Length: 225
Image (cartoon, rainbow, N blue to C red; front, side, top):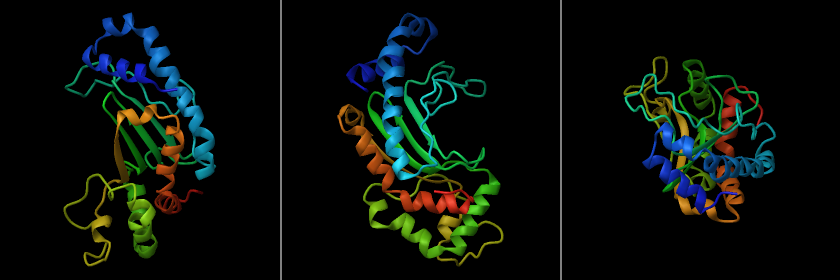
């Protein structure tokens, strides 16, 4: 699947992020990056099904788990056309736009970032998660501070409000989490880990450590897990 050639290609794309170089190396992209990554996604599918039958791991080149190579540069100062990383989102099959929890992986030439949860949910879904935290504070605490979760993830990441959201008790035991805009956790590894033969199994174990967290988010959003 993923090999040193994959990492070498990503390093060279980062250094030569322009259309002329990419067109001259398009065959390499397919052979050394795209196809190995799609094979990796296929290897993850049965492992993710064991975590939850509702998580998608589609290997479609367009509209699947693999994220776009071409960057949207319309509103960015950075006009480089390609993302020199391989990334995938394994999302909930019944989630709605702006409110879909799932798992994430991003690989560049130096590092591999693994994530779980939901990033930048729409306001409606943020409210549902906050209400569920208020309703089930002990379950939330167990999901985000339990031994399995903390053995992998160093707490939650993302942005928060400066003050408690309107309508919520400023003295609530979980007020810092009620202020969150994002409900996600990440861990970063060195890129060399993707070369290990058991990498898909290791990744699945990492995702499994967040099972209670994912189950909490899904229940908050009315989704099965």
